Image 1: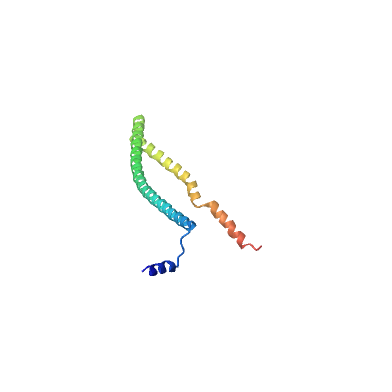
Image 2 (image 1 turned 60 degrees about the horizontal axis):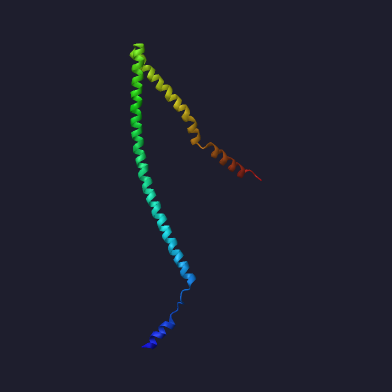
Length: 138
């Protein structure tokens, strides 16, 4: 029985693993573990970011609701004050309405530059120059 065992040991085609191969194998295993840990951290951060983004949306709605309420209360107080000063209800309401219309105009005027920036004028100009330079004969 000793003869067949000796034959199988000698007939194995794989040489013994050198230490360098074992070190590379261990390093690859650790690299996979690091990648798995980084992916798990990324997933956790994305879940946290998604939850925070949803909370921000709801808080923005609450802020708008409370801001509108404060604006209406302030407008009513101003209208009541102007009414007390002038004795005319329509002057009080009209002055608040006029002030709100002027505010809307100022906001729209300020937004105009933002709208212009949204068209990416510098990028469009640069791309136009690039395409013009390509079509010009050298």
